[in-house]
Length: 214
Image 1: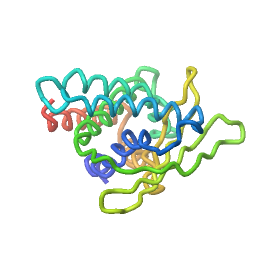
Image 2: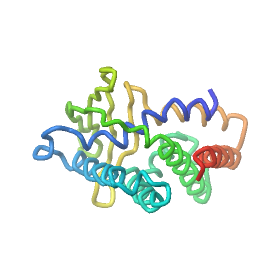
Image 3: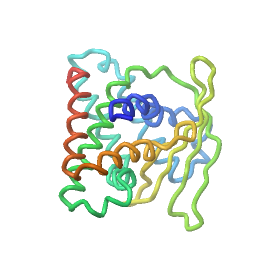
Image 4: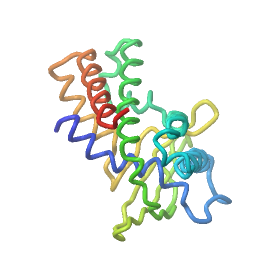
């Protein structure tokens, strides 16, 4: 499967991952620290989307930047990247790790921004949370009811870092975004170098950005 195919596959899921939890009914009083962190960021994202200036291309720029900043705030792209590359992450130099994390974040960000206008107020129900025995990992679970009444389970895997909880993986219908990308990246690394993988991800991120007219 190509990067292009995977990007299309996860685009809708990534959009759901960033836009839906804020709609959980009546959950605020019972929110765990992880869920509260997620809700806070996504409420800010929704606030930018609902701003009247967002529909005007001439005034959308600053709001898009606010959205991007909030995504970077709630997602741990360094953790996302290391888990996506897998055991070979240790063969990347520190500089290569940073370059890959930046390129991967840009790819996901550009994909996300290209789909954000498709948000239609999907309904979400918070169904529970499962934490690791040590309490250093948690999975916030939801069920999303789409406009066609299809119910989609979405789970957000989070960890505590720098005094907050950050997302490091998202499961859409029990399919992990990390594992989806890991398969493709491992295929590239089987025949290429870390620098070649970084170049491929950068090129794809740029392709998506140009397709968005940015």
